[in-house]
Amino acid sequence: MNPVTRPLIRLLRAELADIVDVGVTPMGHRRVVNIQGGHFEGDLISGTVLPGGADWQWVRTDGTIDLDARYTLKTDAGELIQVTSQGLRTASPDVLARLGRGEDVDPALYYFRTVMRFETSAPALLPLTRLLAVAYGRRTRNAVELRVDEIL
Image (cartoon, rainbow, N blue to C red; front, side, top):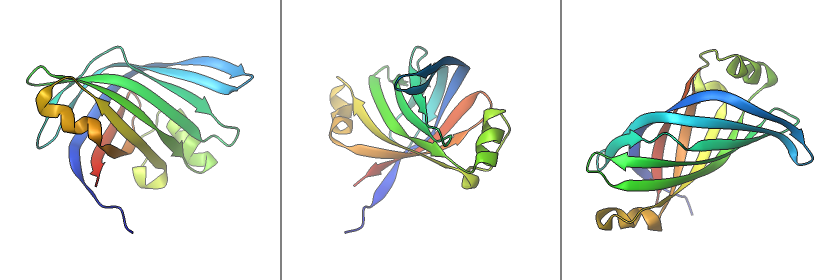
């Protein structure tokens, strides 16, 4: 069986604040990246990424980052969508170091994927609550850019 996807959001750009380094805890190296806002666009829905969400990260000893982001989208029609996104960003140590310095790195050189779930009370958007999506990411100095595809 081969999973099939179809485009859901062509571009989701989340503007990021500086990393809050919580430090190495008994559970691992923890960081928080607060979301300051942004925008998203797709064939069916477009709008803004509201400020106030964040990505709670766990940095593994090999440099791989486990991602756990939660944030809210507001469509151009005023409907709210809560996003939960969990995944990974990993690469060679050199590429991870370049990303850590905020350099522009070709996304083909690193693996950045998340699985997304959606919650909303908007009647027209309730089908979003019954699907999973995969996001393919690109990290820039102050933002994350995602292409989001529905998993069929």
